Image 1 (cartoon, one colour):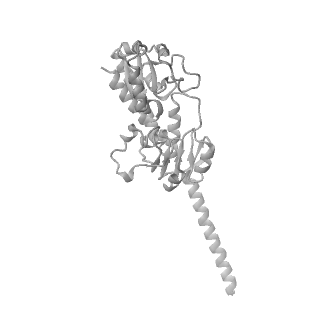
Image 2 (cartoon, rainbow, N blue to C red; image 1 turned 90 degrees about the horizontal axis):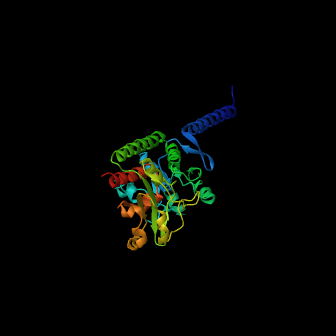
Length: 321
């Protein structure tokens, strides 16, 4: 006969083993459901199917929407108080409660607002500081792409990493492939229409115009459409744009086409004033009436599959007769 105390000890050990086995199964299950990604801050374990995503970078918001996911939080576009206009077109049909909450601006995050969204995944920019990463990674797994030398196709690597983090790698890959197909078709159509030659992309600021690098996101799309993009030797190696130019130095912009971006009303006012100057009037693109005004936020600040489609829309509308 077993004593009562012996029976109790056996029951306690059995109960402890049962609880341990259950806990081990839970750990193994969680591990199986998580994925590990290689990021700028080393390996990061992310949920298999994240449900509450906060994007702290416009490229991440773009990639998420392209993959069919609406984040619960996002930052404003550069110089604005909401998301970019081209992004807005993909959120119009949503109710106010279904739209991403604004959790900060590009260079000033509101950590309390991020925390309030209870994210299980945070997607951030390559430029995120180590100090901000340390704080954000305590809230949720934070995915930061590695910083790369400036190149027109960097956005693709970023979008693919975000797609992996979201568990939507196939959807992002399909969006990138669709862009390649459309770019090739547009290049063929432009060539058939006799649209060719060189181009410059400039951003007009109150202090003067800046030539944008041939390695920018939009520059790569112009090249893919069949135009030769150049910076007139005015952009330093690795730089995204030149210093502001005087009107006299505009003569170096000898492209057949001029894509002319403004970011705000002040830039537009400065451009309107410049249009009356002889230096501006003498540009080859101006004389040939091949100046294409574009949205500076989209063309010189954005990136991602949806931004690329919006730029191709504009190229097609502006260049095809």
